[in-house]
Image (cartoon, rainbow, N blue to C red; front, side, top):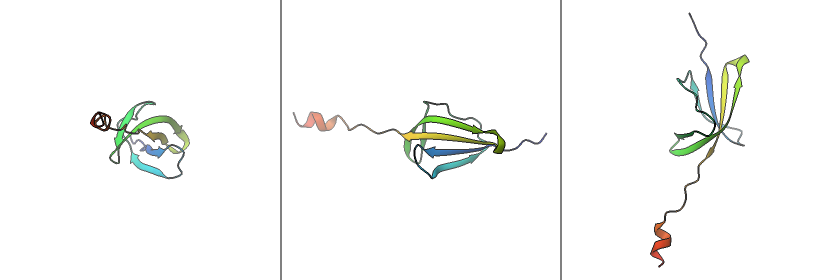
Length: 76
């Protein structure tokens, strides 16, 4: 039985260009899940399925890193 490959596209939220494109992934991340891609941590904000063209669009936002605590303690 032949099965069509599903295209999974990772998008940065509110951007027009995609970050990465995969074909036939074993799993799709869920909303709120964190993933590591392009040397950065991302959080999935929404997922759209386009059944007509076998495509899944995953929208993500980058997780901002907080400043290290060392800076605060060195001033005291």
